Image 1 (cartoon, chains in turn brown, orange):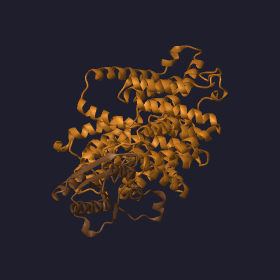
Image 2: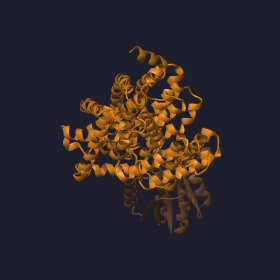
Image 3: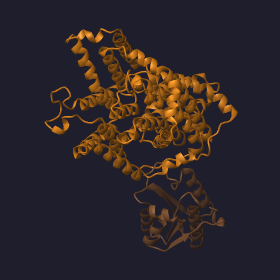
Length: 135
Length: 504
């Protein structure tokens, strides 16, 4: 069994990663980090660069976790996370949730919300706090 | 001088100032976004010519043109993807500087260099354009014919990497320009009454620039996002100033004449400026790793050439870049005919426009230095949103020309042509210049032949015409010679690679 972490290179993604790592240690499971983009804008801040993912891998390795990372361009980020969870029969999906303004809610979809609703397994929704930024 | 002061009085009215601000903001925004350039933006905004006064409309378009030249450098430096073809060379050193943590200095030297070059260029434009107009007014139809042929020739064969592709594009443009019954007989109308009036240039420009680009992007919608280099407020140290000011001036010296020649465009002078700076630098080891001279020179050159381009546009009515071509269309929409008599016939408009160029330049410097991080944010806009808006304005623009649905069909067909041209690497500029100059070329030819009663030798009866033909012959010889021995091959290849990424 493994734990899927929906990762983005910001405090929310890092919180998800930190909590995912803690869960994986407790349950003795693998970590599968998913970082994806729709690839329809020139720059996507939630799409990690290679150096950032190398740091993520290094952090997970130091914790002694067996980790794999997917980093790809997909049609739909939420669907990609859910599909990954289904494929590996994940025991848990971890997402970081971010506050959105009323205007933001009107204009933007929520990846976290769709993962929570669609995932085939329990979902851990976490928020960033100062202490959880270790990994 | 009095005329210029009066021009400032026109340019600084609140209404015109507002249009200048909108123009430079819009121009910088589209300059930042690769694939969307000032030419497309002006084409999409052509419908405003129905409501806005000529002076305000042209101030808006000039602001977009200058702003586009500025904006392109931001993307070149931060993303290594040139926003405009004129910023291709900037990416060579600019992106290396940004990767070395000197993005702020690269942006600063680009912005200040553009301001310096734009201001000097505009002063030269103000000094030269009236004098050139006085000379040009004495020329007869044969000379005009020769100058236009030269312009078509240089745009097609000298600029761009492939002569064959340039010629194909030019032939397409001339063919589209032929449609109609302007000579009394039906040409390429296929018996359709809607084609009898010819295809409106607005429809062609919008289709090729906007629809073609939108379809092209739709065909490549999902791409791996690029890594952007974060940047704060641009600034420069004393040392950077010391290394920048000479390249700015040299870049201006390259850019303006190339812009002003009928062989215009910003690609050649930016490239020449880069080569020169690399040769003259005191720190050759920095070139290829992010030398500030390699950003300062080319950025100054491209803005100076933008100013230079307006010389033939205002004095002869000859466009040499895609944006200038579309601005010419806007002038024709207003019923204005740029050319030798233009400056005397419309002094208020022309001098207002020239004064507004100074205003636009200053606005750009003031806006660009603090706003650089905001412009970088534009790159996060999702393409579907962006291009949905472009398609909407494109359809609106094409429909508002004649209010007939037939034009929308034409728009789509020509848009598919634009897509095919991008697919097969055909340059867009020769087509659009061909559509605009083709009919005027024919007009000058028929005038010349009517005066000489059909005697062909009239075409080389004027000294200016002879000189122009000799220049063309020399250029052909030069092209053949350089074709045999290609120098600077390494750099040329890198630049050619970059050009592949950029469309107008």
